[in-house]
Length: 105
Image (cartoon, rainbow, N blue to C red):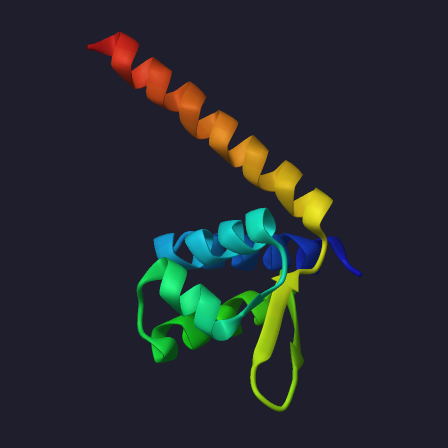
C-alpha cells in the first residue's frame, strides 16, 4: 500500500471518529464486547436508523465487524487492542491539552 493511501485511510478514520455518536458507539463496543443492534440503540439512546448509519461508517473504515443472524446483527471491534491503544492515546492528548488550557487562565 502506498504511503499516500495510508495517510488517506488514517484521515478518513479520524474524521469518522470525529462524530461524537460514532465515537461513543465504537467505545461502547470496545468496552462491552460484541453487541446486537438493539443493545447499541438502547445504550446510546438514538434511533435505529441513526445508529445503523454510524455503524455503516465504522464498517467502511474497517473498525468494526458484524455477523447477521436470523433475528439480529452482532457488532464488535475488529482489532480491539490496537483500537484501545488508539483511544487511550486520543484521551491522553485531550487530557493534556485540556490541562494546558486550564493553566493558561
